[in-house]
Structure formats: structure tokens, C-alpha cells
Image (cartoon, rainbow, N blue to C red; front, side):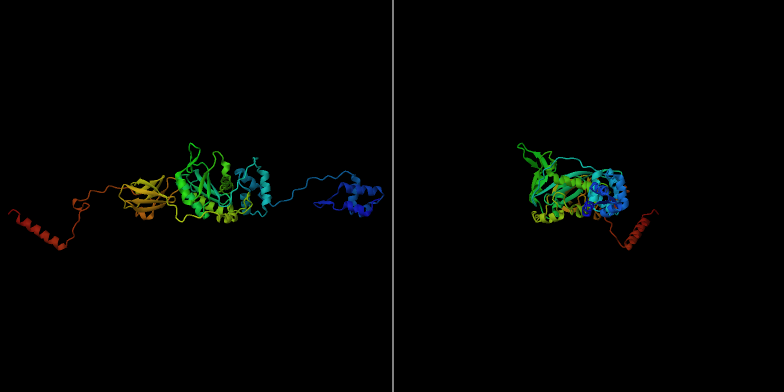
Length: 447
């Protein structure tokens, strides 16, 4: 016979789900064995801790394990946002989970990150890729530089798709990101972006890794040695870093900066409207400060800003003197007093009369000289077809207005031709002259 302790020990720890008691097979055996031993239903209920109705039910059912239907799903905090997440991923399949988490939090989501990332993983399967070899560098040793193309429709020009380029410099150790959208990939843009990046970093890495872009790498010589652009070498000499070119067709050599382009596209660019290029860069700077350079990096496991504070100490110091290499150009003045440089127009003062001027093109500034004298300074304009008129260069019309049409003036009187002066005399002189002329007429008149 079963003792009370053995029966209770078998029934100890039974499962409970949604308030309904679920008996295990061992428990059913205990109930039936106690019944076979002649115990009453009340005694079985007392010894097993079950209700008498439950005992009758399982005695009548036999030794088959009970089956239950599917449970009703419990409501989850993410449920109201499932449709929003599906719609966003349907339109922008590569949006990052962290970007979507920030968006639904702005809509009122109060749950955690895991619920969002787990749900996104079920509706956006990840592509299967091969293994990659990770290449790490010590603090202050390397930065990676490249451009990526983006197509933007600005709200100020909603009918035109514009191509812009994202310049990015990423520090290899901390993964700190410098980025700026530009109109072109020309040499002056590359130099200007380097100056801005090094100024923001507060130092210079010992090596900068480049893709085979024409503004950095001209090709290879007969011995297979890389030929760098002289202007890039000039920048490298000034700041004291060593340029290094990737192997051809090996984009993963600079995988850190390549991943940044995808990160910027998926976490910042997609699904957002921008007024113009200036607005795009302003919001990119804010995103870098509040999101990209504050995140915990998936590879290093550290916050980017904290790692950068450590890497900054390992960077080389900035040169004592600014980079001032100048490209000198000769340009003709237009009829409305403008100078054309790289497809953009810049004003000169109205007082200039010479047909040509000398333009000094710096990385971030344009200086215009007339006969060796500085007459105008302008910030370099992005893109093409832009026009800048300095307020001090025009009295009328106002800056930016079209010049008035020139009308031919009537031929001036001979006595008032330009260059001749009219002497002012007292009125008495003209009165005496008039009397003298009148007397002369009287004396010469016929009698």
C-alpha cells in the first residue's frame, strides 16, 4: 500500500497553467492505484490534495494523459506597434532595429529592446554570408576613408533627384565616425574634408587607408608600386600621416568605413526628409553626436565615445601652422561683375575695371586678386550653378537680384562731354556780358 507521504511526494510540484491544474502521468497512476486498493474518493482527494470532482474526472477518464487546446496568446507591449514595424520594413527593408526602436518609442512604446529586435528578426530574415576575418589596429594607428553615393530628394526641390556623396573617416580602434555629405568627389573636396575631420578629432592618425579613388590613387608604376596624387601627398606631408591604398577589388580591406555607410543609410538616411544639403549635414552631425558616437559598438563591445577618449591621446598632434596650399587660376570678369570657378559664380566689387583677375583656390575659401591686391573673399560653394554676391560688392541692385538692363543714354551736349568742366561765375558777370552783347548789336545795326 502507498503511504500518504509517497502519494504526496509524487504529486508535489504539479504544473499550473492559466489557473488549470495539469496532472502528470505519475499522478494519474497514483490516483488509480489508490482506487484499486479500495480507497474512497474522499480519501484519495485528501491524500493527494486534489478536489473530489477532479479525482472522479480522472478515474472516469482512465490512464490517458489529458489534452488541452491551444492557449489564447497573452497581450504583449509590442503588439500595437507590429503593423508600424511591418510597414516600415516593407518600404525600407534595411532599416536598423535600433532606428525602429527609437521611432516606436517616440510613438509611446514603453517596452524593452529585446522584444523589438526579436520581432524584427522574424519578419526580416538575415542573409546568410560567409565568415569574415577581423582586422584590428591599435589606438591612433589607422583611419579609413571613402565616399559613398546617396540619392536625395530635398523638400525645397521635390521634383528633382539629386546625387550627393558621403565622405566618411572612421578611426580603426574606437570606430569614431566623421561624416559629411558633399556635392562632388573632386580634389578640393577631399582636402577640405580631411581638414574638417582632423580638426574635429583634435589629432591625426599615423596611417590613412584609401580606396582606389582617383583623387587619392593615380595607379601603379611598372614595378607595381602605388602612385598617389601629389595633392594628397602634400596633405600627408603637412599632417604627418602615411597614405595606404587598398588592394584592387578588395572592399572588405576597409570594412570599418564600408559598414559605416550601411549604418548611416539604414539608421539615419532612409525614411527621413531633408530641406537641403545644409539641413542634411546639420542633422547628420546631430545624429553622429547623439547616436552613432554614443552607441555600444557591436564588435568592440565598448561605447564609441569612451573608446575615442582613449584613442585621442594616441593621435599625433595637429601641425602648428594651418594647411594653406593654394591653387592659382586666371579668370575673366563677366559683364555683371562675376567670376566663374568650378561651375559657380562669385562677385567682385563694382570698382574693378580690368578684364581678368587672379583667383586663389584654398580648401575652404576663394580669394580674388586684382593687380596683386585682395579685392574679394568667398566661402567655397558646393555643387554647380550656385551664385554668391557679397553685400558690400553691390550698391544696386540688392545681392542676388538680376542686374538691370542697360539703356542707351542720349548723346550729351558738346559743352558737357565727360572730362570737361564748367566754371561757376557770379550772376553779375552774365548780366554785364548780356548788356555788352546788346550794345554791340545796336552799334552794328543798319541806319
